[in-house]
Every structure is written in C-alpha cells, then in structure tokens.
Length: 179
Image 1 (tube, rainbow, N blue to C red):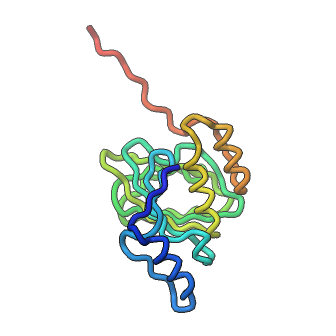
Image 2: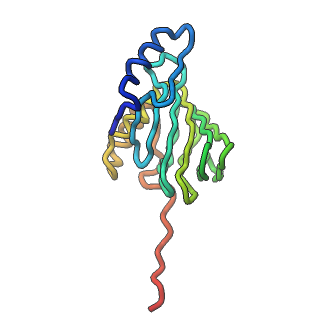
Image 3: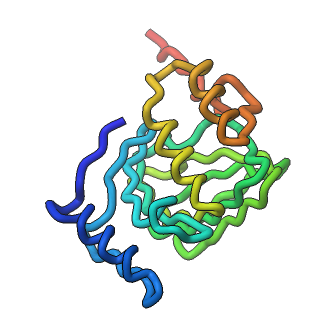
C-alpha cells in the first residue's frame, strides 16, 4: 500500500478536528490520506479514526479498472456517487451503468463489483458504514496483484465474501486482423 499525506500537516489537522468532534469535523481540501488500492487512488477523508458510524473517501481510477471481483459485505453498506465518468456495476443480478449524478447504494449482503466503462478516468465519492469498511479497503491496498488467496483472507477477516476468484468481466478477445 502506498500512503502519502495530502498535505504536510494533514495528520495533525485531522487529529485536532477529531478532538473537537462535538462541534463537527472539517477535513479541508488536501487533507486526509492518499492510498492506492488496485488501480484506484483513494483520498480518505474519514475512516475509523474519526469516531463516526461511517467513513468517506474519493476514489479515481482509469478506464477498464475498478473493483473487478464480485464480492458481498455481510455487515457493511456502501454508497457510490459518480462525479465523473461512467461506471459499470454488477449489483446483485442487475448490471447497470452509472453516469455523473448517479448514486448506487449497496446494502449489506448484495453481491457487487464495478469498473470504469468509459474512456476517461472515473471519480466517485464513496460513503461506507460502519467506518471500519474503510480500514478493510485500505488493507486490500496491501495485496500484491494476482494474490487472490491474500485478497480473500483480508476480505473474510472483514466480514466480506469473495464470490469469484477471477475478474467478473473478461476482457474482449483480440481478433487477429486478416493478413
């Protein structure tokens, strides 16, 4: 996992805000944690450290990438708000395409996965409840590409079931051009 401070004093500012939590928490632009998970870049604004019942982060990822493994959270709920791009979701038995302004709400127990179905980067705002869901996502960022056993173990430890051990969407076959 690659973690970078978004600003030099982000940790201190977030910490101070949490101490004054009775008045609310303000995480300013450039504050939070920057984490890489698979091909995604996450700007985590609040996780468990905020002491709230939910976590929130911004996620951006290039065409063809996302969370390609069908999975379900037994006790987590997620809300995805599409800011930019087009996202293909497998949501239960339905396949949907979400565009800017769309919200995709995933209750606990619903199988899901997603990928960027467009030609430009996607930007999502994700709210997850409880906040420990953000910790699970950060731990997934520590998995080496292709280490499905470790991915499954981390997900299971966080009350999540990996339903497919291969990407849900298979890349289109390349047809050789006639010579």
